[in-house]
Length: 317
Ligand code: AMP
Ligand code: MG
Image 1 (cartoon, rainbow, N blue to C red):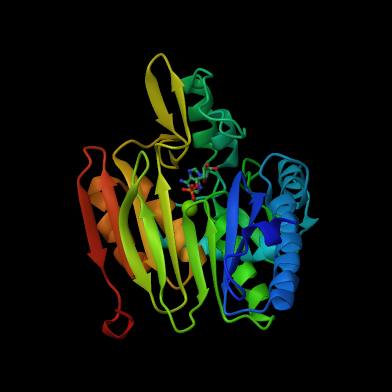
Image 2: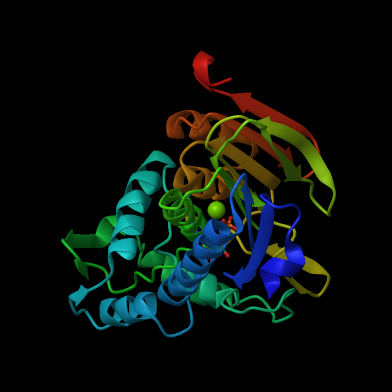
C-alpha cells in the first residue's frame, strides 16, 4: 500500500500519517522491509490513539477531563495526559507563565478550536476576554494524584496543542526503538525529532516564515527541532491578522515575534519552548530561553531580523 509506493531503497523508507491537523512523516534507514512494516504499523496505531486522546475540541480523554474540571468533579485520566500536566507545570513556571496550556477557553474564544485556516470570524468582545483572564486559569490549579486530577479553578481548560506534538514524537521514537531499526527520524509538519542516527547524519531543514528553508542543520545525535510561528495559523478580520498563539498575561494574540525555533534533545521542551519564545516577545525571549536551558534557539522578529542564542554544553556542539 502506502509503504510500497514510498520505498526509496531496500533498507531506506518513509511513510506518512495524517494526524494532529498535519502530516507526520516517519523515515527509517538501514531497516529491513519486515521490520519497517512492523514499526510503521505500531506507530500508526500510536498516533491515532494520541490524536483522539489529546484532541482539544473533539470527544476524547482530554475533553472528558475538561468537562469534569468545568463541573468541579475529580476525574481519572490517562498516563499521557498526566505526563503532559507534569511537564506543563514545570514549563509554565520556567517561562513566567508564557507557556500555559490551561488557557484553552481563551484559545476557543478567539476561534482557534477549528481545523480550517485562516479564520475569518471577528475577534471576541474585549469584555469576554477580560472576564476569562480575570479567572486566571493556570496548571498550578491542578491537583494530581496518580491518574486522578482535580482543579481548584473551574475556568481551567487544558489545550495541549503547544506541546502534544512533542509528546507524540517522543512516543514514536520510543515505539520505533522497540523494533530492529537502523536509524529513524520523525517530521511532524516541520517539527522534527531525530530518534537515532546510523552512519550518516540526518539533514533537517528549519522552515522560514512564508515557505522555504531558513537553515539546514546536520544532526548526529537524538535531537528535537521545533518551530512555532504566528503566520501559518491565524485569523483575519477587517484586514487585521491575529495569531493562534496568545499571551496568557493579556489573553490576546502576540505579534512581536514571527517565528521561534528551539533545538534540544527533549522534544516536550523544544515544542513548548518554541511556543513560549513567540509569547515572550523581543525583550524577554533570551531570558526565557536561558531559564528553560534549551540548547539553542532562533527567533525571527516581526521585521524579519533573525537572532540566535546558543546555550548548548560544549560537548553537545
Ligand atoms: P504551537 O504551534 O506549538 O506553538 O502551539 C500553538 C497552539 O497552542 C495554539 O494553537 C493553541 O491551541 C495553544 N496555545 C496558544 N497560546 C498558548 C500559550 N501561551 N501557551 C500554551 N499553549 C498555547
Ligand atoms: Mg509548541
